Image (cartoon, rainbow, N blue to C red; front, side):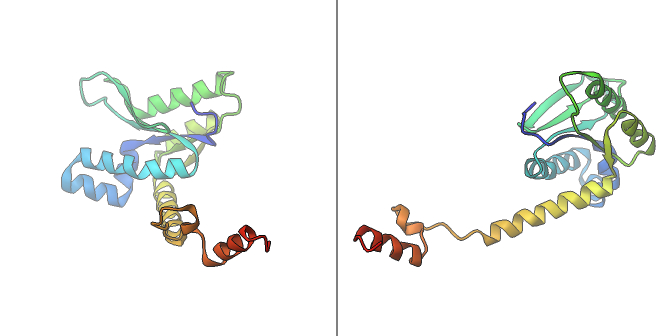
Length: 182
């Protein structure tokens, strides 16, 4: 777990897909896999921007398969639970672990779900929670902030020298300094 993270975000994947209108529509039109991929894609930038260690948890209790953990990027993992285990159970166990383990002192944990029972359980373990709609809103707001920042970044000069990337005023001051006119 990176030491610079501000919090751990546990996302109840199918709950969020079912309640996040764009993901729900994608699931209905193209199936579950594209909706899962889209949720993960949207959480990558959000997690990086907010320094979150994000774990998107998907139920495997309807499939007879072993659980697995897929690291998408260093700060985001997709967790597929074991057969018979729900995402709720995984999230509850993780919250309990963070509360009782000494190696996670005062670790800020956030659970994203609109499942009321899950919210109450997470709070009982000292975690914060946000609804699926709140997560959707925050992810979209963060994406907009990033786009605005990228628009305001001046285009990089294609010149071969460092001075090519300086504004004309800075270049003129540098030239005067070189000539000793400081």
